[in-house]
Every structure is written in structure tokens, then in C-alpha cells.
Length: 422
Ligand SMILES: Nc1ncnc2c1ncn2[C@@H]1O[C@H](COP(=O)(O)OP(=O)(O)O)[C@@H](O)[C@H]1O
Ligand SMILES: [Mg+2]
Image 1 (tube, rainbow, N blue to C red):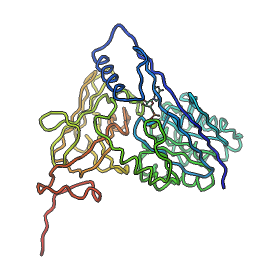
Image 2: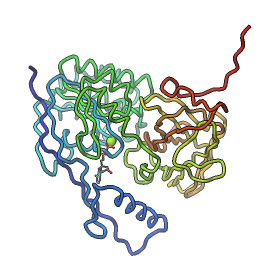
Image 3: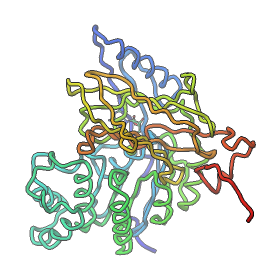
Image 4: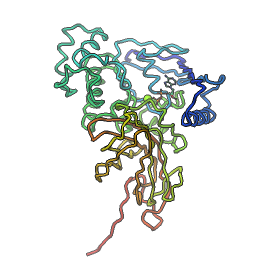
């Protein structure tokens, strides 16, 4: 029997949120506060102590053990506590109550912004991270070329990482964490940033790391990746351990616990985003053809997908690319609306505004979809990217005009067809 490398006992983590008590408040700020107090009314985990101070249990009495060599997929909806759990295990943040015991060196790849020193170059950060992991200079040197080749950042090795694009940053951060021979590798869902080819490379590398007898903890919304990489699945639900078992059983629980648009957090308040932040998505709505907000979609109908934005550049900004992506329950992209497909890149107002994308005759089969918002400037600079901006259910509708809704368990995209016998 292999030895236990991680032991978590009755772990709880409380956040105390201090609201600003300004006498001066913007209209938008007041609206946001009103929405937040509504959310906390609906959310049993949030407790209003008194005005302006709120306690929130991001993790609540979580216990489990992980043995050496296990590859554990941690899944759960947004806000379930996945990143908090990884941060506690990486000792970035302290438990409020409970205990954790870890034996072995941990390398973690958490949300962008942790782990690297922004002012240091790629090269310096590789050495710094190796040193933190307790490796000698010689050991790091031996791994150096492999890391650089994996991350494909050779040209930018002597550039401070604060100048890296988010894609480059994540590639280097992953390469460092995976190659510096940690005994335990912890990866949050940063892989979402890379392109499909790089994601595949990362999954392969994590599998290798696991096969070498090392332990991998992996948070992802990509159910196919969890299914193929992991030997075990943990489903977190509202800060508690909902299920600890096979990856398949954890995935089933996650999928059964479906979403509705009403559960979506205000985009303005989301912290799980990447990009320069010069422009930020602040809100999301779906409207029907008459401009009325709707909670879910029906196949074959016409909709407006609307994203509100704040522009912090102080200038009207032209040639801005918006991309709205639909992912199925397994994490595969099934539909993509992008301004530059139709030569309709947007010009943004100086301060804020809304972008609407009109989609006619939506061709999605019944099911649950995840929706991401991507904003870039002329395709060069990522301004804002929120991976799971919203969850959208397609429920019913009559795409074919025959009453059939297709076979949702078999296909996600519908198309009209004509059949001939010749
Ligand atoms: N530093 C923080 N301060 C206050 N609340 C936080 C902080 N970090 C996370 N939270 C809250 O804790 C909950 C769990 O967050 P997180 O662990 O990031 O969830 P997940 O990674 O599963 O989406 C969320 O509701 C989030 O808003
Ligand atoms: Mg997270």
C-alpha cells in the first residue's frame, strides 16, 4: 500500500469580506451592493454580521487523504472552493480551522499572478522557483533547456515576466511546476488559457508525472481531461466534500447539479479572469428577439447575447475582438461567435457600454452549456478573458419545426438537412 502524502482533517476556511463604507457612492456601486446582498440572502454560506462586514465559509469541514501516485481531479461549480483548497494545500493561505499534513515537495500552478515575480525575467524566475523547491543550481540547470523548450519562450527568456502575454506566462509557469520534479504537483485550471495543442501537451506531461509515482491534484472544468488523466475524483459542493470516488462518479454528481442563468455571479466581481484588464466585462444577459431578458434558451429561436464592459484606457478603443464560446458539459467547444469571423470588430466607448451579439435560429441541442467571454485588442493583447462567464441551459424549442429536439445525448449542434433517395 503506498503511503499517504496529503492528509486533510476537518479543514475549514473562512473569508471575512470588508465592504467599503464610503459616504460617496456611484450609482453602479449601489446597484452592485444591492445585487450582492441579494446573492448573500440566497446563499446560506454568507452571513451578514453587521453592515459592511461579511463572513463567508469557502471551505467547510473537508476531510480526505491522498496516497502517493494518485491523480486526483477536483471538480465543482464556480465558487465551490476548489481554488481555495489548492491554495491551502500550497500554503499560500492558512486554514481557519482543521489540519493539513503534507509530506513531500509541492509545486503548484495556481491562478495567474501567483508563483512568479513580475519584475524578474523568465530565466530568473525559473531559478527562483527551483530554489524555492529546494533544488541546487546544478539540478535546475539540468532541467533548464527542457523547461524552455516545453514552454516555447526561448525568445523571451530575458524579458521580465510582467511583459509576457497570459498565454506565455501560463506556459512557462506550467513548465516550471511540472519539470522541477516536485513530489506533489498541484494545478488549478489555468490550462484553460493555452491553446488546444498546449493543453494536450500539459495533460500528457501530468500523466508522465503521475506515472513516475508522483502525486497530481488537478482542478478542471474539462470533464474529458479529468476522466482520462485522473484515478480519483473529488466533487466539491458549496465548500463541502460532495463526493470522493471514481472520476466518473464525481463527474456525474457535478453534471446532475445543473446550473441556471440566475446562479451566475456578476462578471464585474469575478476574480478568476486573465488579460491586461484595460477593458473588463462587467455583466452578461441573454435577451430574446423582443429584447426581454430570458433565463434559458430554446433551440431555433433568435437571441441577443449581451456583455457590459468598462473601458479603463480613457480612450475610445477601435478594433476590439469579442469572442463568445459555448462549451458542452464535457468541456468541448461546440459553438463560437467571434467578431473577426464576420469582420465586425467593435469600437468601444470611452468609459463603458454594452456589446450585443445577435444570433438567429440558435442551433444548440438541449443541454447545459458553459459560456466564456474573451476580449482582445486587434488579436494581439488579451484584455479580458473569463472562462466560465455563465452557464446556459437550452431547454426545448423547435429548431426543425417538427417538434423533434434532436438527440441531445448524441449531438450538440443541430442543422437542417434534406434527404434524397436516388
Ligand atoms: N480572498 C477572498 N476573499 C473573500 N472571498 C473569497 C476569497 N477568495 C475566494 N473567495 C470566495 O470563496 C468562494 C470559493 O472561491 P474559490 O475557491 O475561488 O472557488 P472555485 O475555485 O471553486 O471557483 C467564492 O465564493 C469566492 O468568492
Ligand atoms: Mg477557481
